[in-house]
Image 1 (cartoon, rainbow, N blue to C red):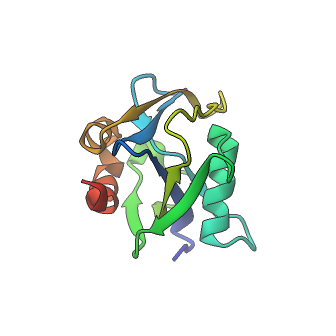
Image 2 (image 1 turned 120 degrees about the vertical axis):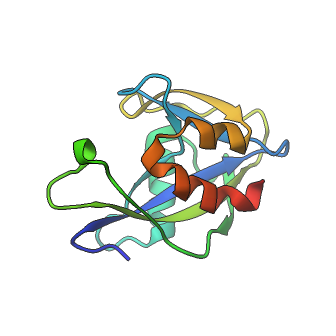
Length: 145
């Protein structure tokens, strides 16, 4: 789904047995929360990219979470003018759903993109995410509501 105009990426949704998801606060925008996400590297499948991004940004791996599903469609959004990078207009993303093996799991934010984390209800997260990503979050997370 990636193209010259849209960067192909993944989003990792980690939930626990209480129906909450892990949200992470951005280092560059305090008070702005989102899910781990990132681009798919050349030669990498979307699910491999999701596992890699999850590990890089949160320290969580297969010993902490298990893959339980995938949103069936790509979600696409455009970056606002101030956020555009070069000729790319936005991102096309695949969403992957993970469950924590243990509700006491504690991620380690990378300190580069994220500096804090917490377990939250999905509607709260959707309300906190930056406006241009909101429709993708509503669409992909609707299965968890």
